[in-house]
Amino acid sequence: MSQLVHLCHLDTSPFHHLSRAIGWICCLGLVLLVLGCSREPRPIELIGLTMGTYYSVKIARLPAGIRQEALAPQLERLLAAVNAEISTYDPGSELSRLNANPSTDWIAVSPNLYAAIAEGQRIAALTDGAFDITIGPLVNLWGFGPERRSPKPPTEAEIQVARERVGYRKLALRSDPPAVRKARGDLYLDLSALGEGYGAERIAAWLESQGVRDYLVAIAGTIRAKGLNLEGRPWQVAIEEPLADRRAVHRIIPLSDLAISTSGDYRNFFEHEGKRYSHEIDPATGAPVERRLGSVTVIGKNAMKIDGLATALMVLGEEQGFELAEREGIAAYFILRTAQGFATRASSAFRAYLERPSR
Ligand code: FAD
Image 1: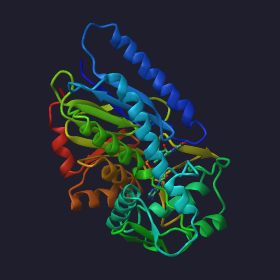
Image 2: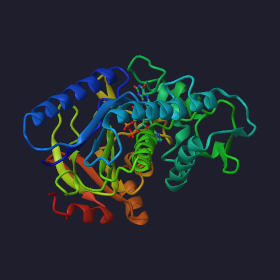
Image 3: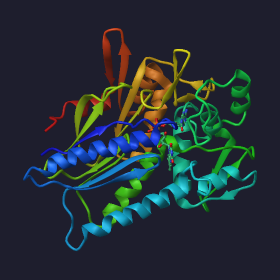
Image 4: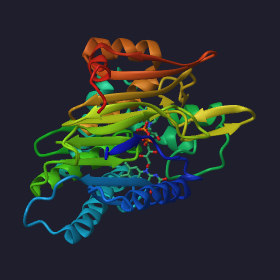
């Protein structure tokens, strides 16, 4: 039995988010039910909701001495802790408290929050600010954050006011002891672009601490694979086609000891007067990116880093994003919409994964 996981995002629109997540869980449950009827062994699977979306943890082999029943509550506690660190949807989280703090002095932060912010700042520098974790005011203004509003575009004046609060250079970092300093007290950080990867890394670290060596962790569109599946083969992960109305497998990638993440414009968007606005915001314009680029998938060692990079390449677009991927050796796969259907472009580093046999 292959362990096929669709590398796909749920509808992360604030308006349909939870119902889609529940739909996905039901769908997953149905698949498990069908699999359960077969005599073949199947991996242990823990599934649930987190970060307004779903998670799934598959374990091919459990080490001796680890009780399966003990895993789910431990995982739930870990995910609650992760949300309490970096969620902007939880007003009591460490990140929300940092956002609400008007001080322009150094503010001490936990090592975990610091690690996520520092990764965001690294990607911001790499992309010259196309990726920017201070994007929060614009994300909220466009209705893609916790401050929900009716799905229609803001005015140009509102965009300009929000843009003044955005800019990664307005945030300074100090590693020891970990602290950040805002150039403006009303800076508002949004770590959603790398949050799923951050969560996947934390789950992976916990599994490793339990001695688990063969697992597949998925938080929506970000997946971290380690070891082999039940058949002793690499885990099978499907990249999906960037379609808003249905799910279709685009291609399958065998994955072991790597992470994969997709960002796209096809799940989290709203339409107004016939125009689609997606949640990837270009800090240079203050508006959602408008391109024929449907999705970008990135493969690499660290789930948090590639989760952020996938968003960064989406914002940069097919030309600039592709150039950056080639220059930096990033394994990236671009799916573009054309009049003739989907076209694809794989960076040199990604091509190696396309050449691997999928089973
Ligand atoms: P990605 O492509 O990975 O990221 C896109 C997101 O990045 C945008 O939605 C925006 O937030 C941000 N972004 C946009 N443009 C840029 C840019 N130029 N640079 C940097 N970042 C940018 N959602 C809910 O509805 N309810 C919840 O309770 C909830 N809780 C969450 C808790 C946590 C800890 C996190 C991290 C997220 C939570 N979310 C919640 C948000 C949601 O689940 C997704 O993480 C989010 O929508 C983005 O993930 P994605 O994979 O869809 O898109």
